[in-house]
Image (cartoon, rainbow, N blue to C red; front, side, top):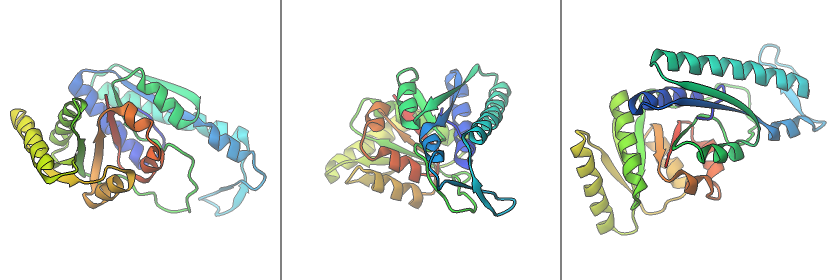
Length: 250
């Protein structure tokens, strides 16, 4: 899982730890020192906003590296505590590069990735950062893919663990195909003693997923076939706009 110090990251850690306990898997954390931010610091007009003083001041690379080390140490401690509570094997790695490249590399090693870190550098006005809604619904994208069955199972587990509703986002061009896929998914869920509500997607793109995540007040979004999404144009922008954790399954 990819982490930073944000409400979304805390929610992602909780989701990843719960899934790791369910699947008897290792909990592996990744902290990326974003070189795009490093490049930004090199620009002469870059300033840091101090929440305490309200002042703008120059930001040096040395200061940013110290901040990275403190943040990584905090996240490693949080991951270790979560793993120890659930008696999980865990690991934590710090790397420097672009977030998208490091996550893509991570995808070659792990079957399941939980994203709690933004994929790009963003400039935000000072203020409260919104996080994933507490107890929000679990949304699962369900397509005519063999991998969708795995994501359906993961979504059902997350919904059960958190006591929330499971919502199936079904990508289908025609109503008949949508109804058949919904019936198939609900039959699979019934075998597991679970249930889910279906929503039809006539278009599968970033804006549509973002709109549904907000409308349904999602606490988590599960996507299957992670390699396909990591390579999709515009996927990084969608991830940055979604405040809830995103689970990328194999």
